Length: 416
Image 1 (cartoon, rainbow, N blue to C red):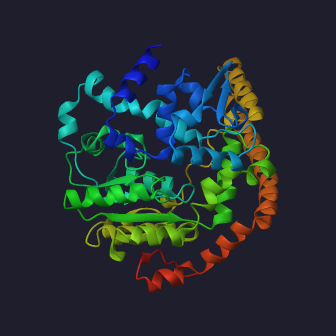
Image 2 (cartoon, rainbow, N blue to C red; image 1 turned 45 degrees about the vertical axis):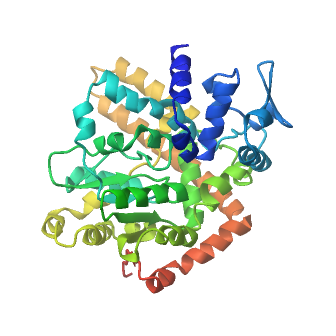
């Protein structure tokens, strides 16, 4: 009840200018929350089966959404309903729901609970913005930056310019880059690239504060990216066990096909930023030679620094992989293994065989995970070949380096 009241107060105080700048999905959720008797959790978990013509039927309540939403918002709901399955959420992703549920509280938390008002006013501006894309080595880049201390990366995926966090204001955003040293500040977010409103806001922010952002974009072959993401979701127990249904659903279009048209996205970015501000990092190049790719990115960000330090670092440091389903224990069978491991560790805590037990469980988990990925990859490959959109995007991707050369945009270039 306290959270409900807090959200009511918070949403009702958002002025019309800020409200109109929010993504359409957030505006719909806020309107439904303020003008219906549904609680916040019920709204963000609405499914296709809850919609009947112009109404929502849930918990014995009938809500006329046409009376609450304007024409554009209602049309957006109608389009989403056409492309999703019966038991799928109407709003795009779990991430969207989490951003709305938790991140809107962050500004008030910083001001009232933590009492860090001085920090809010003394934060720095970022120098480098990573626009995306998901599952294209952005986590690898973030962790390398964090461990080397060349840069000061903020928390990963602030998503300030493309989410409801924009309502928190620029002071809140700058507080994320609070640091006394003169290191380059980086905002690593994966949701900006396919969001033209976010790119426009980044451009306005740059002009307002007389900055010259360096824009990084990480990209990957579309079919490979879809495969990686579905496997990640599967291994972390977040759903999509039935790949056939998922690949044929509207979420593939919204999350991947729409966001994997890189040339279309780059042309949008070029509407606001010069070619010499933009750098494209190819996932395939990073796999071939991660150290050289990182060096090329550093060259683009600041050509006069870091070269000597990079030479002293071991090649293996750059070959570490991140975000590959480490939370695999959420998948039912792995959850059982994890609980069984805890039991064995407790039972044999004083035994000399504890290390061996841990090693056996680790190897068995890895083996099962590999089996799961092999099976999953077969299914994804089959359905990717049948998808005309994915085949077209793969062909476009094969010619992308030539087009970037003509546009005079820098990119990673690793010779075989």
